[in-house]
Image (cartoon, rainbow, N blue to C red; front, side, top):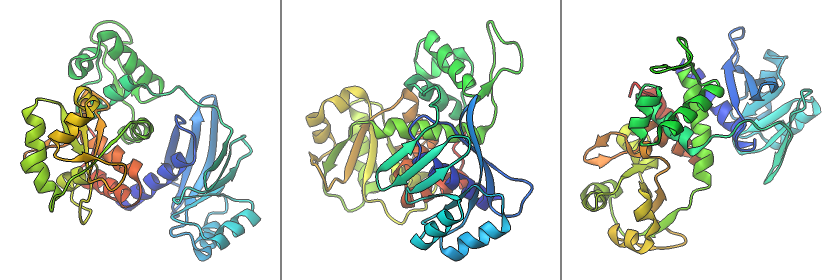
Length: 350
């Protein structure tokens, strides 16, 4: 069960990586087959593109041919890193393909065309309603265990009542929330339709916002980054009373250890401190650099992003935010993200 979920997540992430920002991607395991295949949907109604995707493991020709033989109704083959021979074989047999190296060649009868080799991307679906920062804040509130009502989200996030109402309505419009009871008036309550899909959609949106954020790179010497975070960096941030949290590999190590070591501390801080770079660098005991950083600092995306648990005296970002950041980083960090989601969870039950 866990392995099937892991592969489903990898298929979805690989799909998102080769599409333009803002497109909805849903991946559902196929119950009628024993091979790792999925029903994939790209876009939003009425302009949806549906196809069958299958997982070919490492992506060697033998892997690809075996999958195609077992599941002859495949439209698109996914793999970790499709070899040149595999890609040629798939093209010859008129099968689309996507791999975790970021390459893709997909042409569907529905009109979806995705070609990605190196940096070139050609895509022709219709973009859906884009996420806003208030939607991210409302989603993080729900993932933190806050009831998806206007009143509760307003209190938790600090946004206006109108902002909370609009954010929840837009999440409902994306099919992530639903109102099983009365539709209007005071006390209207929404429910999450599918928590796994909710997390996936939030992760995609959060990664998109993160890619546009400014980042301050700092260099400082430390032998043990987590020890330094607990004994120096954290106390310094608490002393000035700013909202802050650690994310990335350090946060994943504190929440669900997986990675062998932490080389860079990734921090979020409030807007005011982030805007004062010289003060920020002095407070964290480092100097600003263009490369060779040991600390990366970004502005808190939402007020909810910093409302994760305190572990060993260290303020950790919301687990869902940590998960999204790890997925955005890719590689071993994405593996740590899957581990975090499996062993600890990143939804409201955490």
